[in-house]
Length: 51
Image (tube, rainbow, N blue to C red):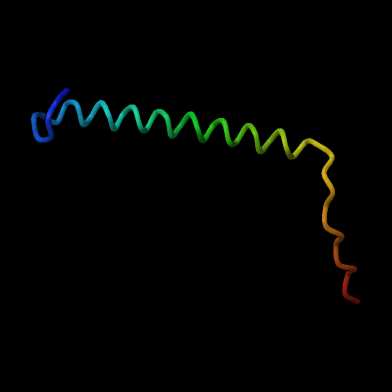
């Protein structure tokens, strides 16, 4: 286990790992949102047009 302040290399790899996980999560959430858009879901009634 490395101590804090040893070198910047472990921090960089940690940041890279975190960034990769964030990208994966973003892609997964976007795919999930796209899948939900395609499903039949009840929508709110739209207001009648103003005349």
